[in-house]
Image 1 (cartoon, one colour):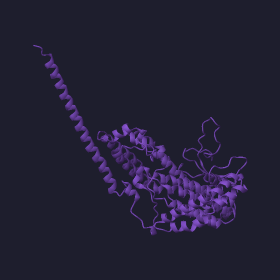
Image 2 (cartoon, helix red, strand yellow; image 1 turned 60 degrees about the horizontal axis):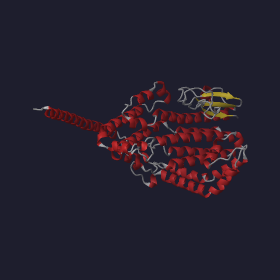
Image 3 (cartoon, helix red, strand yellow; image 1 turned 60 degrees about the vertical axis):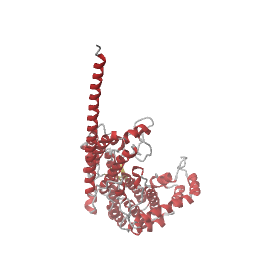
Image 4 (cartoon, one colour; image 1 turned 30 degrees about the vertical axis):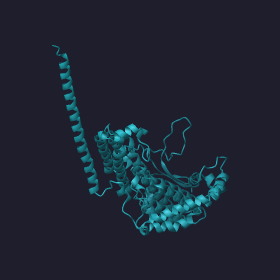
Length: 480
């Protein structure tokens, strides 16, 4: 009697039973892991909510503010009016761009390009009749803006409308509008200083500071970075205005006090909490649509692969997605715990390296879709350095107005003028200050944490084909 077929069937049955057991165990483990990790995510989110921190797009949108109490309603109208002015002037402005030329260089390609030249150009461009004619045309709407910006600043609240419900796809068009208004005010301040209208210069600059404060509670990293960009623009305008005209002690103090109200450090936690809510939204969106947003703001699926989208959306992938989300929340909690640290402190203790190395290898969403937050904090400190340096710059102008010349040291400036001078956030020491001829050089050592002798990123450009020198001191200069 042949028993081989029966033995084969017996082995097959044992194999199938074993396989079934393995499948059941895996399914149970998967289900248990999904439940446990899901509850951990929910528990973490509930803990944030209990502390009053935002966890959803609705939280970022906030409760409605009546238009009568919302300064952003006025500023939105200012932005629309400026856009309409630029649109009506488009043809004439293009003629201005075409007429504008300096030393045979090609004309600027846009009004923004030309405006940037007006704010931070070299002396030869400042004295060009063409550029002043362009500046007058560009700044024409500014006079009508000032009372409306002041009216908006007097409101108790300021919140711009954004499509927060779109999560990472949310757009913030008002950010560009704020930059355009600031650029216009910067040019007006230069024109007024050149004409000897220092009172008007100070008004334009003070209103630019008020405009910057209109986004101080924006719950996003974009808002924080735009604020830093505005501090750069305002700082260049201040230095050029001081070069064109005389800012006396009284007006220097007004600007110094206006800058004292700007606190970018304070808003870091608001921005990071908003970033966390964005990522909570993203992980929820991934379970529904399978979409992952490498770099943010994209409507493409991750790697543009429908197969990956299906896997991410599937229940099979749920435990990995929950574990990934916990890693993302851990990372943001870590940065929130040190949000008051300076970039210098973070780098000296290699905190950013430690946080990034703690991200598990399986947490690929966290790895590809979260910015290097230490770099964001470096940009924040650049903004803080700009504001602090602007105050020292104003104190130096006030000192010369009082004593007829600039001080020999910052200690002398402190003792004789009595104004508070902040330290350089990148060095933890005084800004570097040197007398140069009848003027001075003042600088922060910048993000590379090295003293480059006052050389900024635009100084001594590298020869084509060679490595960039990497200068990044943040500088203020006066020649008179």
